[in-house]
Image (cartoon, rainbow, N blue to C red; front, side, top):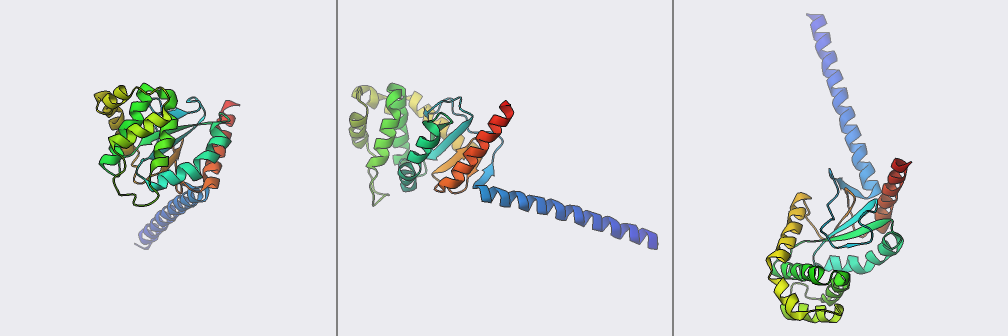
Length: 232
């Protein structure tokens, strides 16, 4: 009887040790992620083949912003973080940058997304001009006030898209094709469980604080290093 009790206690201790080890490894992994700025890793990176992309889509590092034209933090990110990111990595062809529409602010978010996709369809080379111009029009106060209207979008498009066909642009705003692109973005939002804007993903890694440029840079450099090692 005593031998059975000893064996039983030994098995319990072994089990407890294994559980503790697994918990410790999980904690270390989570701490490591937080130190590098990574909030979560997904099975794969968001697909960008159909997304507006600045830079080489074949770049080893893909930076994706899930954003909303009605989101004040997205406007802040586009002015505070994006210019340096573009200079350091996109303009040097080390990374690509893509944008995915998120509709967290209702009808105005949807209308802004439709307008962006309409420009992408009719004047793809001018998409980023329109994109930046629309964020610039976002008011600094009263963010919840109505400001994304068809009239405002027409003004922004005319000012930022040199060869804009106004009739075509208006027609595209209500076209099934453009709506389909916005719907495709919403599926990505669902697939990648996007809960806030802006959300920044670098390949398959979600950044915890999108305004921590050093964290973003560290993840990019790590991805570039791993890509170089695989090439060798």
